[in-house]
Length: 169
Ligand SMILES: Cc1cc2nc3c(=O)[nH]c(=O)nc-3n(C[C@H](O)[C@H](O)[C@H](O)COP(=O)(O)O)c2cc1C
Image (cartoon, rainbow, N blue to C red; front, side, top):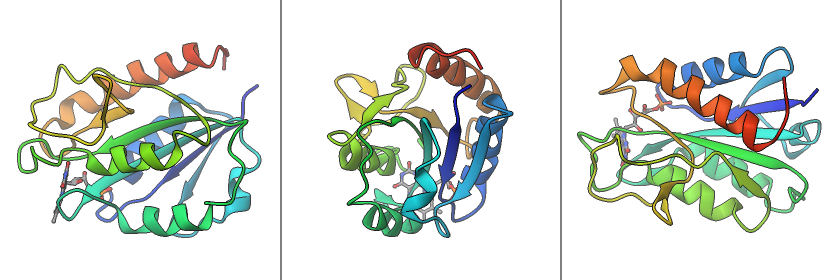
């Protein structure tokens, strides 16, 4: 059994919805946390941490994530596996698509093991800070323009993460 904590920040509800769907894929041992109310100690019980973040304000992290990252900057994450997913809008923000995901990745990459990189080929954008060596730093969800693809993207990505962390849930 692997214990999974799904931590999300949201300003208009989309990332909550996706976080719920991700938690369902890892059920029954997955718990949801809104980072607006979470504390560093909330990370402790989990083997796998799944972090979900939308991009706001032309390339910024969602506000609650900025505050939560500050809270956890002294937390030892070296034995955790972390998988990231990001929400963005590739049509209206093609120059800063998923930048929040990229900023979150940059803050975590030297502190923990990141899994769940995702190919960028099926999205259309000009620039993204989430691009790392030709891959996106996590699952990309665009609820504004491609909602119909969300369920299958989540299912594929969660299966990929399960294989990467080599567990059967
Ligand atoms: C004012 C505003 C700024 C945004 N800026 C970006 C952006 O820079 N990059 C991007 O990919 N998406 C951007 N978005 C799209 C949001 O990330 C997207 O709607 C997301 O699903 C919101 O998630 P939430 O409902 O969980 O807050 C922006 C949306 C708004 C309304």
